[in-house]
Length: 97
Length: 140
Image (cartoon, chains in turn blue, red):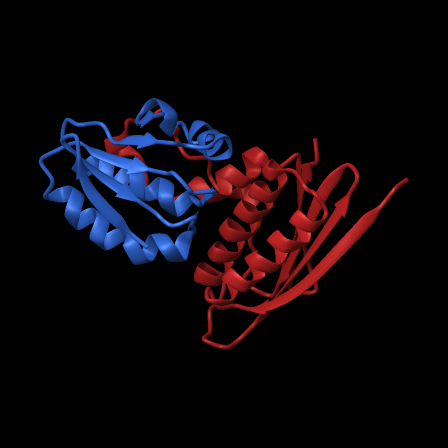
């Protein structure tokens, strides 16, 4: 399930536990549309997310491209997911907390 | 004492079959107290390799079997994936350019690179018109 909330001037997305290819295909268009038109910084809150596939990394790249000057921020990123971002070199292009 | 348990699963080349396969593999590993990192790496490998095979490996619209063997020993998890898709060795996929800024990053190519980076060993064979891919992850 995809949830988004306005919080502290940010557009914050929350996700289901497994962000595999099928789930990313399902949410991709909605996330793209919402982030393209958003004027505030975008935050992906990964609380409760225990798996991301490369499809989610592609989604992050796409959102960052649409974000204008604001870097995409990911919060509550668990160690195995952080490792995947690091291997992909995305840990230096996005903000991970 | 040396122990090895093996799980053998067969699915059709349908993305919808992946979810139940992943659930079964997850239960198998969790019941044997596999570490979270091993469970993650096995899930990622199945996700990336099988998605790639199902999306791009077949030239017809017919159902094709894909078999997965997962062996858990005291030292490692050994995954063997066998399919009759077009010949493809994931080790030959080009490495993505990780130095590029996000605006220039190609959208594809990360999945197989992740698997290659996380695995301790990968071995590919083409035998009897089948792809046989073995991927290993250490348990510690």
